[in-house]
Amino acid sequence: LVGRYRCLSCHRIRGWGGDLSTVPLDRIGSQLQRGYLQSYLENPGAVRVSLEERMPHFHMTPAEARAMADYFSNVFVDDGLETPVATGSERARQGRQLFERLGCRGCHIVAGQGGYVGPDLSESGRRLKPGWTAAWLLKPAKWKPGTLQPDYGLTPEEAEALTAYLMSLTTAKPG
Picture 1 (tube, helix red, strand yellow):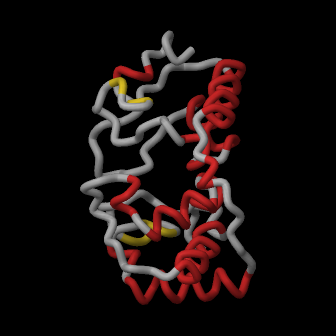
Picture 2 (cartoon, one colour; picture 1 turned 120 degrees about the horizontal axis):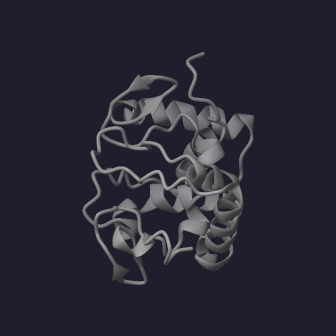
C-alpha cells in the first residue's frame, strides 16, 4: 500500500523519499494515535491551515486505511517516545495556565480561536500521543530542525503539564 499510494513521493522514511511533506514517517506510529491515523488516511484534511501542501485524498477503502494505520502504528515507532506521561485534571489545569502564559494561542488554534502558524491543537487529545507531545515540547528542534516552534526551555514537569492539557483537548468546536 505504501508503494501503491506512493507515500515516498512526498514523505521520507529513514532518509529516503521526497521532501514535499514536512512529516517524516519514521516515527509516525509514536506520534499519532492509531485511530486518528486511520481516519486521516480515509479522509485527509488540513492540520496546519497555513500550509498550501495538503495530503491528497486517495479514496482509500476502510480496509486499506486500517492496514496502513496498523502498519505505521506497529512498525514506525520510537520506543523512547512510548513513555507514559502523567495526566489528570490538576495537571491539565496547570498546563492550561502555562499554555496561556507562554502565548501558545498566538500561533495555534484551540476551539476556533488563535493563530495560523502552527497546527490546530483543538483535537490534539484525539490525534497525538502523550510521549511524543512531551518530547516535542522539551526539544522541538531535535525532532524538526528549523521548526518555528520556540524552545521555551521547559522542565520535564512543565512539558508533562502542557501535555496533560493538550491531551484534554478533544473537540474542535468552540465551547
